[in-house]
Length: 476
Image 1: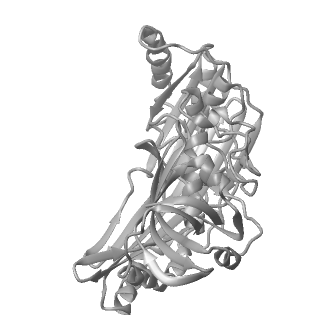
Image 2 (image 1 turned 135 degrees about the horizontal axis):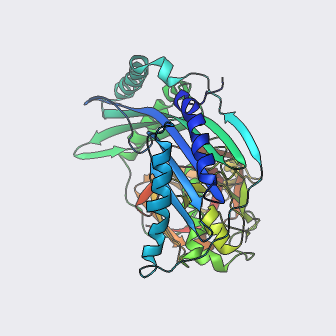
């Protein structure tokens, strides 16, 4: 089934068109982004149940962008009807646009050209099987409670299992002189986190689930908790790893974290503008093994990082960042593209209608290869299989990377020994890590349960993943 556009946006669209036409009398370029996104978050554990609204994702509001021949100004608001239009136009004309002239002694002004657009009109919607809002809170909580209780009954050492489910129905309209775009997208994600105790020590792991779709995800979650419990119990006997450089195999979860941290943030081209990314000096140069091809794009996959147009009205794309080891290009919003003399890649994203659009990742992943995971394991004399990524950080200016991984399974003579190490920190210089990749699996997975910040703020939904990879890395 298709998810229909928000009824609210359908109702106010005629007023938005009136506002657009009024502003076009004053300015050569005008755009309006309208957003209406709503969903819920559910958490169930031994300590209780919570149902809440995520203030970071739920929003209803509008942002107008106008071009006055020199630069762009933006005005956001959260209410629209035809009686308010004269006041909005007056505020933009008399208060907002002249404000830039008062800042010339404080900031350096850059002159931008008018955005050139093709005439495009469409209305697109994602598909789903079960609408969470129609399923209802009671039934969703019952399923999550069943999963949590099922995990706790497996073994007396399981002291709790936290189960999370979240969904968002995202509706947006983008209007300009040449564009009339509508999109309606539903995504859902979940997580199961069993916790186990041995003496005074508590260990945990988590299994994630995500889909561009609805509450059909709950069926996947019902059948995933046994694996998460098994791994959690294994961690009770884990020990710290001896720091060193090792051959490793990264599962798709860890591969995705590397893609996101290594060449995700590093190729956000608004960082090129500020000279804060080393990647800008390596376009058309070798930065990875010839086995590595990396994508980012909202149309590159159907996941939680997907959409049909970005928050600046640029159509979603599939951008090949690395092609067989060669860094081909970065990703960018429209303003960074104008400054750098290139084209936007559909990566201009806002945390919400009150925030600026930045260059942001969408679905970031490596392409598959030709090896089986079994072949990769058998090729390792001594090393580790890394799984269950936790978090990461990067330094785009110097290309350093640090990834926290929950599990490292020891491999000797091409076989698992059964010994588990945890937690593990993967570090290194990005080109060294990527050039060391010697095998890539035929299967791949994407996961989209996380949010990505620009530094410490500006959070947006993303997905990451890829195949399993074999590489040489530093662990500690």
